[in-house]
Length: 467
Image (cartoon, one colour):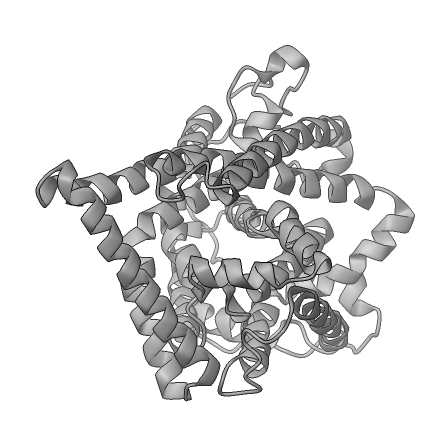
């Protein structure tokens, strides 16, 4: 794809007509080509090869993901029925109401979008580095995914049903299918997967069983039965998590995964693959490696993405207002078309965050401040898993049992305090060791041998300057 590929299309998956407004996508230094015959063995990325900006973005995204996970999942809100949610909102303070709306508009879905985008970008980086050394990327990449999947399975069934590692590993294999595709092809697939896959999957889940079970007249009964089963499963899950033993928690994880998550798996996986593809495109174009050369692009991206986010937010508020005032039934068939609106807001605001951070990172004073997040990004796997362990202790019955007992404001404040402690710990750890504990296990399993762990010299500044 030549230099006329639209920038907003790349990061938002909107379409190809934005070049009329001066939104052109930076050209590649050379087009993607078939990899050379492997001449060298793939090896781990050295600390000196890491890109500081990507680690900062990863640390920033991890903070938002943590806040979102606690707010929706560990606090128990994801397992509440609609009447329970409405009752909780009725007794909430104006501060909690404001925070709830802010979470929905500014946080939920946006940071996992950035995290997914960075995963695709990371694959592109690995591919380019391996090809530059004449090494084969596919065997190493597949081993990494297999090990990630195994770690994710332990996390999913043994700790928390909201695990993202198994999802990323499963979708990661699909990236190999797009490895040599042109950017135009990636862009089309990304747009379809992000904006249309959920409505299509929801329609199939709603109407195919209806057709198989006796036509339209069976629809309301089937929908009512499905809602009752879902409410019962959520109630059982909430009880097991809030007051159950560890064994009961593990059983609830499995029941919820197979009963709720697995049936709608495609609607969850496909939009993430679309985000992976956008990251793959950005990596090919070296947007973040050569960020100072693309500042005009990021400025335009910031403006246009903000417009997209505002449009998505306004439409979302209208839909919420209509549902709250009984003007729109949440079970209405039309609600399946609300997904593209939500995706518009999520993709737009995620792009605003990324573009804003890239621009701030070019300023020396801001770069020093933002580099505080780099060690957290380098230890993303360790910090992600430790967030689960800490949250289980705070909210689940196997620990303090605070699920459903903390206000949104209290839980968000507590989450930010914990993340600040992770920042301090990450700096301390990486001043002494090359990798985080979980990263070391992952790398050692991938390469089939224990990787060197300790830093050659212990330096308090090494954790920042080496990223």
